[in-house]
Length: 93
Image (tube, rainbow, N blue to C red):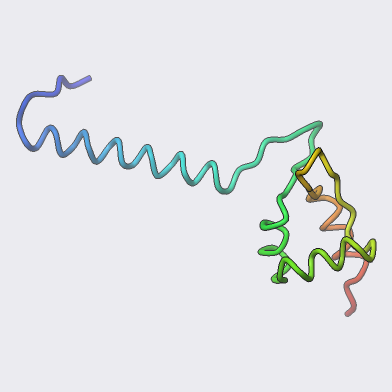
């Protein structure tokens, strides 16, 4: 590993590396979700983006029992597999 000196070039290279690592971590936090027993859980916002619907429409789908969800205290989560199943079951060719 190269030792970093006091030159501006070395400091800029170090800063670039740190910014690159930060961007990678932000990407991972946004797009990769932890698995729980092999299931991916999505937030309401993520489901809205996935289905291209508003939060109010998602609320209506929940109220009507069209989309299964899990409530943990105040947090509402959706299994990705449930969303995919709903889409497959309602797909018309």
